[in-house]
Length: 231
Image (cartoon, rainbow, N blue to C red; front, side, top):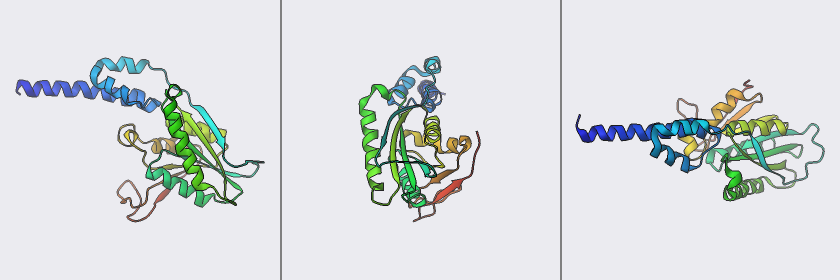
């Protein structure tokens, strides 16, 4: 092994160890700001104790907005839909609307921002704009009541807490997330299926090729129901 190759290998291991620590110890707890990954890459294995000492975040609801009068919720069926702007989450909204599209139903559109977004107004503003847009797509006379919520913390924990607070009957979530979470942070959908006491419907974006993992068939919007999965 040449000296140059050895040095390159050491650098790769150094960077990878720090990034993995950021993903496993911080990313899955809701800390998703890209600065953590840069810091991990720079500090390498020295970043592990720093990441481990970060406190576990508690699920928090930052904002809740009822876009239509809710009235008496007795007997009203409620779906909590996870929204992140991805094609899969758009399909989740469409699936929820198809299942619970009557005036006797309620759809809660929920998104989760970074655990530290309470300090970053821009993240909350972007989340609010996304939810407002999605709520507008569901608007109309005779349709379901629409509520939007912004939470912060570990995504799966926040969504489960919101579902409990809203007395949801079903959770609808895209099979895959958007951006970094799609490949590095693990599948929030999978964790929801494992932990949720409620039925979970997994939505797949249109024109997604079905593979061994069960994504939608070509040219279709495939959604797979996952039965009651206990904690």
